[in-house]
Length: 178
Image 1 (tube, rainbow, N blue to C red):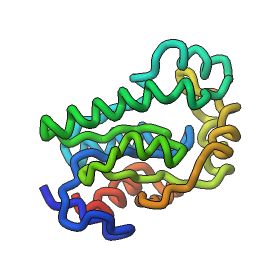
Image 2 (image 1 turned 90 degrees about the horizontal axis):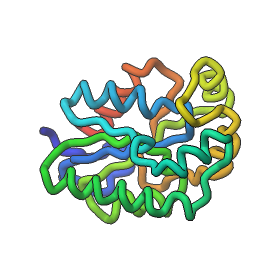
Image 3 (image 1 turned 90 degrees about the vertical axis):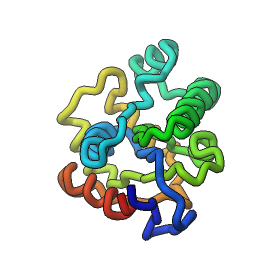
């Protein structure tokens, strides 16, 4: 495996990337791009939504945004999974909204082998995408709250999502040198 040199935003030159946290608001393509990228590079793919406790799922399904108190245990559990994947030497892609810097800090936990990639697009582009899909419990009505919560990442690779999913996955692969 090539090193994960992060040609943009070089943070840890020469350290191999083992886990990618693919972040962005709902509808940005995390699941689609994450699964494609995992297939391209032969890594495991995980959707952070699958790790939510039922209480969080019920809240979101009712159109109620989660509060930080709802997220902390979930984020800590995700961080533990990342540690397990790293300990096992398993390359993994985790699709997770990770909208705030504090959330990303918990997930990355100062581990140089973990990279954050921000799937970034306009409100209109994402709203148009959401109008064409049905998510199992994340209604399109929560998009505005997601954009309000989003803190632009400082130490992540940003990838424009105004392209086909295969192109976005290839762009990420290239930017990470995988």
